[in-house]
Length: 101
Image 1 (cartoon, rainbow, N blue to C red):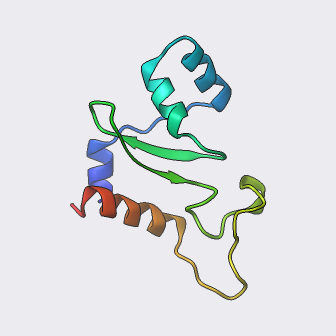
Image 2: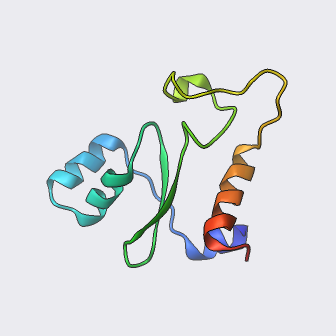
């Protein structure tokens, strides 16, 4: 799966204020990203044709995160419970949506 990610995906980031500037200028990819963006950080996957496929949100989908990077209402890890690591969550999500190769 790691090789697939390295070969088939382009990873980039954009600060939210810059994203909004691009939206105001009419950038279609920025508009698509903004439609699916949610606080605090999104991993958004699009097809090569620009179709939205899936996403992961750092504040909702990753367990055991630092409370300062998420909204207070998101549930945090109960004491003594082993939650999946961020790597496990990310890789399981990719496998579920893009296969295991």
